Image (tube, rainbow, N blue to C red; front, top):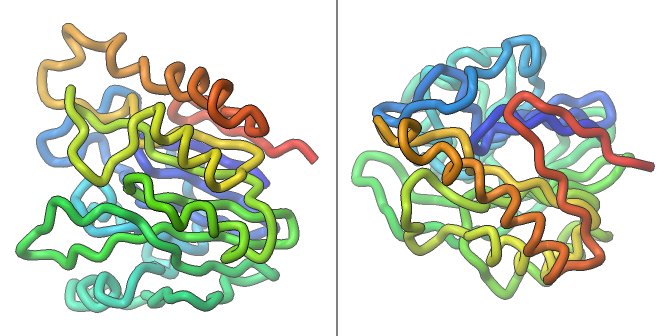
Length: 252
């Protein structure tokens, strides 16, 4: 199990011979938002087999990035899949509460997320996380979410313990709207899930114009705060804080 963080919520998960990419943001910027780190190296996300989309906000479902992955199967909630198909992204697979095969013994199912506070009139507002299960372990891809009680039921949904959690810990502004996790509430989420390892995402990557000139240290703070909060609130879990483009291999 190898995890590569590309920045924001884009993660490459290499699991048992299947390459999975979450919420791909592969271009230099996301609309008006600027990228602090360099754009992802194409070598790190080439040969993607499956793309998981948590929801259709522009920083998670960027159409130009999705069109750079024509061979990958796009998996998301049924309403999201229907919207993608209307935009000529036809290699799509709807996810539900059951397990969907992804090849080589790897399978994926949808799980809840609490992220419906910023509806878009032109895109469905169907937000979920996913569980990815293979012979080498289970990964919880939280997507954008706030805390919800069913996080404690994730091991039961997975049919076993959660090995790795990919949890959002920030955004790109001084305030987090409802439906997001701070570093401290993300640590609570990890504790509820019982994950052995946790990687923070959705931080330190995107910023509004001009912010990097006076607040770079602020943009880099959430990862450290998350690691400290996990040590305090989820002592059975190890926080793994990566820089964009960096990889980590789960210990056996």
